[in-house]
Image (cartoon, one colour):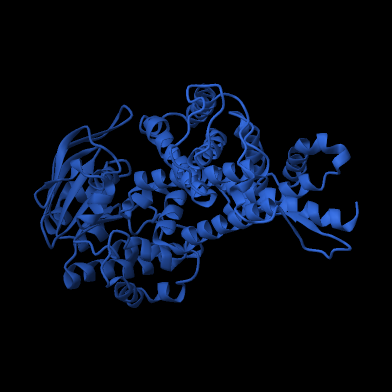
Length: 233
Length: 316
């Protein structure tokens, strides 16, 4: 479904990614784990066309994403839940969700809105509130629901557990698994919590200083001594 | 000041204040999206007034490249007003494409953009002078059609006379304000604009084509600027190529007073300055221009973020 080939990204002199290759098959949950600054977010931002790679290719369903604008990427069925949620704080919860469906003009937007409120009842209670007034966990739910409003086939999740209480993290990861197994959404998950990520994903890539160090099935990675030592503590 | 004169001055203040408001909204729209002040806005205001004059089929003076030229047809004022606004909007888009966008794409400093917008303003003034000379142009009395020049809201014994022009200006400004308010708060495009204003990166992750919305913002800004230029030209005259420059500075006072980036702030700021100027007694009318900036100074001492401005909170 998604094929990242030999991607190299520079941020003003600093090499953020160096020749990384990642593939995601339809129906999978694939995770990128690694320390801060390893290049995980940069990979997602390259797919969404927020950063421009220097070298390499990103092929999604046979098309070269690097020839597309960010809004075209969304139209092709890729939604990105950015790090730090980035909800539109001055807009209401409902407006945030409706903007998630900005690329659509079918008649089912209201139905999907209703559906997201069923999936995230906390958001339904707060639908007329400004998104900036929500708690961190609620904002994460809003960011995910907003991404789902575009009806993505591939969902990019950047650090969904960041700064949240364990009980909220648990319910968010439950939703992630449910999205994958029941709604058929393919997921590329970036996470610092390697244990949690590998328990959720089918496969994983370990990024270190902008390169792929180790890759394999989640079970293999959970059993790998290097991974255990560096990321599973 | 007797009571009739007082109400007349209030009417004047509301009329000019409402033009200040829509003009200042042109700055506010661009500022809230890009965080820059477009100094070319005053020049676009001037262009709007000239465009309307042109569309009315009126001849230019004896100087300039287009001396004594005119369109082969003349349109009625209301239509020319709208077309003038649209043409000014197109100039706004042109300015964005030719100057602002290339600088933005290269990650140019916002100070650079600001200075080049000043340059654009100077260039427009010079082009106008080159084309149609430096003389003043007035819309003909017939611009308002069959409307009487003034309306008496009092009685024949104690008249309360308001110039029809003032009523027209106020009404047109209110229509523009209502339209913009609706556009921004109740439409899909308006919500997208607010999203881009708040966080352009996130907006593009949602599938919003930010580039196109920025162009649309420049169009809107130019449109309201052009309409404001025509309205002021109707009230006084189009005083020449520098027509919009002083007005442009006044507009800056309005947005800073109201709070940078705040739409209600631009409206309140415009009305406050318009009313304050109108209430300057006629024997001290030389001080009129100073009033806007005096108010600005006093209010900023008390509320540095402006009347409706938000205090910028830096999140870490």
